Amino acid sequence: MSELGEVVPERRIAGFGPEAITRNAYLAAADVAAALLRTPVLAERWTSPSALPYYSTGGLARHLANQITRTAELLDAPPGFTAIDVLAHFTGSAWVTTGADDADNTDIRDRGERAAADTTADRLAAEVDGCLARLHRTVPAQPPYRIVDLGDWGLAVDDFLLTRLLELVVHTDDLAVSLDLPTPEMPTAATELTTDLLTRIAAWRHGPLAVVRALSRRERAPESISAL
Picture 1 (tube, rainbow, N blue to C red):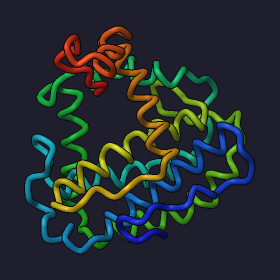
Picture 2 (cartoon, rainbow, N blue to C red):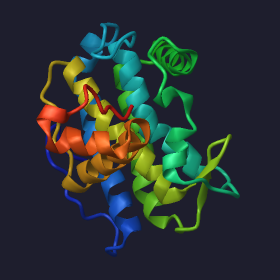
Picture 3 (cartoon, rainbow, N blue to C red):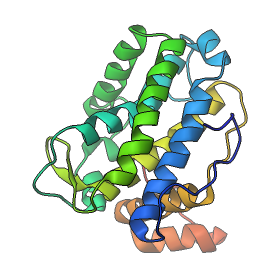
Picture 4 (cartoon, rainbow, N blue to C red):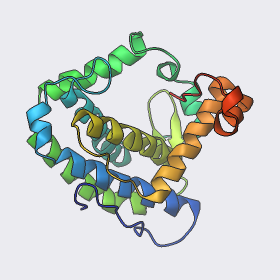
């Protein structure tokens, strides 16, 4: 396991294909997130407001932890049968384009707050560490054709891990800010995969020209190209 703020080595799975890169990046980012969830200040701030609207710090920590604990559950569950494209996973989800007060986001937040109320920072860290140890065994063993069943649809296992990687990178930053701590540095591959996926979602939401202008022309940049 990494200590808080330590960059985790990107050497997890034999091979250099895209599957290995995504799986390595997911596990390394999960190590970083788990280290943050073990920091003692989390217990002190558990019921305090977080950096995200309407989230307590404990609720945000629970949501971050879900990217590890829920992943372990889904990989242990029976596989699905059909998969959609990773971008369609986001374009088909109402929470991506709705505001914090809309039902889809409220439901996600309320589930996290209820789950946080039923645990403590120490118990959450222990749960995460146990699931993460299991994931270090199960993630490398996943066949590339495995489909993860998400209920309404499925994702190829490496696409699924990419979606969880995005959540880990984004919410580790949210939680660190909520705790008044420096945001832990993520491994390069984790950041690159996340920014690539966010760029694709942003281009879908705002159009590719808006993204190009935001990244290259300050004088013509749109007000926002937020992906989420």
